[in-house]
Length: 597
Image (cartoon, rainbow, N blue to C red; front, side):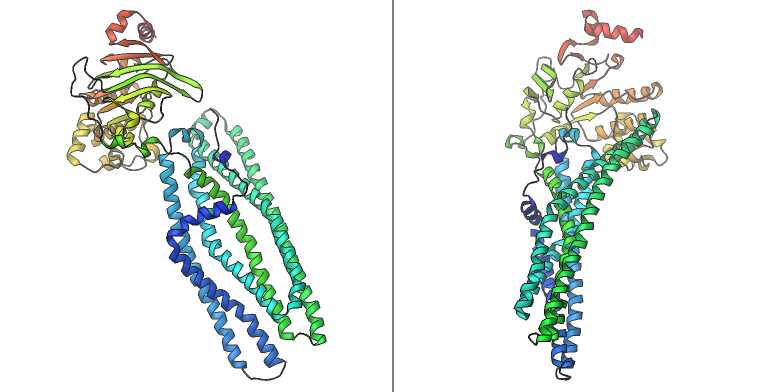
């Protein structure tokens, strides 16, 4: 099955406006903060623009004329402009920081909710490191844009347009001469835009690939060392690192061109002002104050342009991140998050437990394939309430797939899977999974206490917890732990042995009061000494419960009421242990092979 990067589905043509508008939809609920920030920005811009004009007045009205008329007022006005600009700039920065934090909080919550809702096929195609990158690096890029760029870019645009109007009013001829450099700047910025965008996208892609690589091989470092593959992994890392370096170098090169380019154009504009303005002063057509004010406004004009280049980098990086975030948000959730109206009431198990009654679970002519690789072919199997059924067969026969289909992780291409007479596609799958509990071969424990892992989000019920521990036969195991139920298990249960992790997973399953227990090779990774304790716990757990046992070791299923032998995606034989042995078929041959080996 081909691994599909979520980048594969992203269309990169003419998406700036679309992505920006969609990003702004996250800002909408916080519009009051935006209004306050914009108001502060306008006031800060106004005070900033006032400063060069006050300097012009001081030069033309006081210094040139040698008069003090209005001089002190101009000085006070200039001081007010400086203080006002800094105060409102500070207020703007505080507000946009708060705005950014609130927006990324909402975005991260929605992204995490979507990732949780996505089907397992999404995780089959996308490595964990890439998904983590979406939640951290990409979200942070959006935060940086909102906190450092959103309102500031608007402020810079207002500043640039306001200065253009002021320059036009100060002196039309001088303005039109400097307009040449402004047009040149716009052309240059547009030329660099596409290249910066593509390079930022490449850098983000390489970041995601690097994160995915590191997560995978750090998690599997034991296998790497066990097979002596350190040097091979180092070579792979160098390839990823070189790709990352090339993307970073390309981006740095582009900015090495961009910033000096803007500096050159701004210097060219100043040369024009000094040349034409100087001639105007000498000719008496323009005042010294106007030339100095013109130079001051030009500096303020190109200042935002320089800042905008940096903010443009932030914007492009954020938009490239938004592409990937929105690609995930637009994916179709698992069916359980859009349960049909018929799922409003969950069916009760059939009360008739006598042979021939309605089965609790039934597979009817189920067909399933993983992207063209056929696994189940007209598979049919019924399981009565309270029945203990084993599913055995060779590797790749489809045993685990049967469980995944029953739990709704995947849906069959044909056929039906019924629970208490209802097709599971019409049920609340979340409710089904609370009633049908899977205990996998490799149980996963979260980094917390034993109690945290048993509760797994359920309310604490001390009386039921005691019943749970007794029913699993693990009271002594818990009592022997250093801190009992408050013992920390470590990341992924690293402080516990495989058998101890399995015992905790048994207690977690029983505490949630399941109607059906599924044990997928529950003793597959356990040593013989620990297996005795685990097997004893399994027997106690299965008492009075409908149970499905998936096993390769046939000695673990001899006590089951029925054994289904799955070969090539279908049930080849079915019946109790003794009957299958007497039939002298596939099961008998396989059992004999295991006993004599």
